[in-house]
Length: 226
Ligand code: ADE
Image 1 (tube, helix red, strand yellow):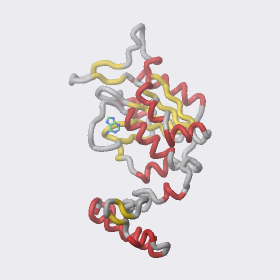
Image 2: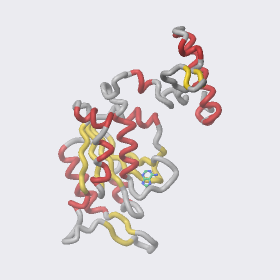
Image 3: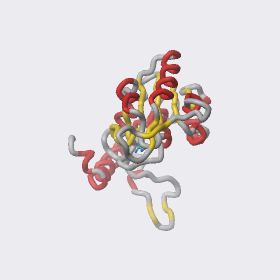
């Protein structure tokens, strides 16, 4: 997989890909992540990227021309399966979307800023609009990092134990059950006995029950369609 990210703040996106699982996925050649500085496509001496909105109103809007130029250049080099715009009025991101995106070869993610981008970019170039939650961030960069992380960890070979992505919360519309590690007795707080019993069918049953209970308690909305 290849992910291209268009941003005004490439330095903000460097660290999420420079450590741990994502960095290992890149080193192993399982994913390529390329950051593109939109400023390079800015207009004039000051490399201008934004302007006042027509009709009045507070806040600057990112202009169509630099974004068109940048995306058109990238599209000449490869075909993108999705051109995603990170925006608080997009579709709410969830595990299902992460799963779908993880099956694609080339993703392009555009990070917005200010009051957003000229609507003509959205109408003409964007194929998918994603929000990571009902709150407004200063820009799309953190959202792009969230989406990339959720997608990359699903790629085959990224996680050491492949089954661990399958047992994540949300993979079966249930939250994950509680987990414990050694010691079995920590300051008198004991691990549920079944987990140390070696009885694997019983352990599996306990995990499923706990996942269900936790979901019913914390996210009953996830059980509504079940
Ligand atoms: N940009 C600003 N706020 C955002 C959000 N909630 N999700 C995605 N991109 C954003």
